[in-house]
Image (tube, rainbow, N blue to C red; front, side, top):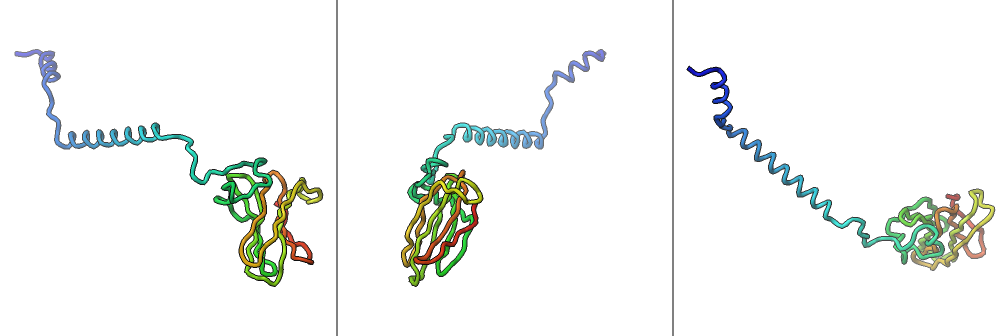
Amino acid sequence: MQSRLQIRLNCLSTPRRRSANHRRRGARFLALLTTLLVAVAANVLSPVGTPTASAAGCYRQSCNNQDPQAMGCAADAKSLDAYTWNGFYVEMRFSPSCSAAWTRATTSDCRYGGSIKTIAWYDWQATQWAAQSNVTVPCYGTRWTNMFNFYFYIQSCIQLYGGPQYCTRTH
C-alpha cells in the first residue's frame, strides 16, 4: 500500500494532457504577443523628427517681411477675418506653424484699383504701428502682402485709389 505522500508525488510527476482549447488559446496569445512586439519595434526604429515636405522656412520674428508662399507658411494657413468690399475679397491669413499673419485679396472686378496692406501694431488700440507691408492688387487674381510675427497686433486693410481705407479688426 502506498502512503499519501507517495500518491501526491506521483500526481505531481505525471505530465498532464493539455486540451485542444488550451493549445489554441496559447497560440492566439503567442500571435498577439508577436504582433505587439513587431509594432513596438517599428515605432522604436522609425526615424523621429524627420521634417515634412511642407515644413515652414521661418518662425515668428524670422517671418517678418517674408513672402508666406515662398516660406511655406501658406500651406497650413487659415482665415482669421475676412470681408468683401467693392469686388475685393480681403482676408487676414494666419499660419500656426509660422506664427505669422498677412493679408490676401482676391478680385475679379477691374472697375477699381487699389492696394492691400498688413499693419503690425505694438498695441491693440492701433495707435503706434511697428511695420507694414503694401501690395497693389491687379484687376483679376489674388495678391498677398508679406507677413509679420503674430506677436504684434495685426490688421488687414484695403484702400481703393482715391478712397478711404477699410480694415479688419485688430487681432
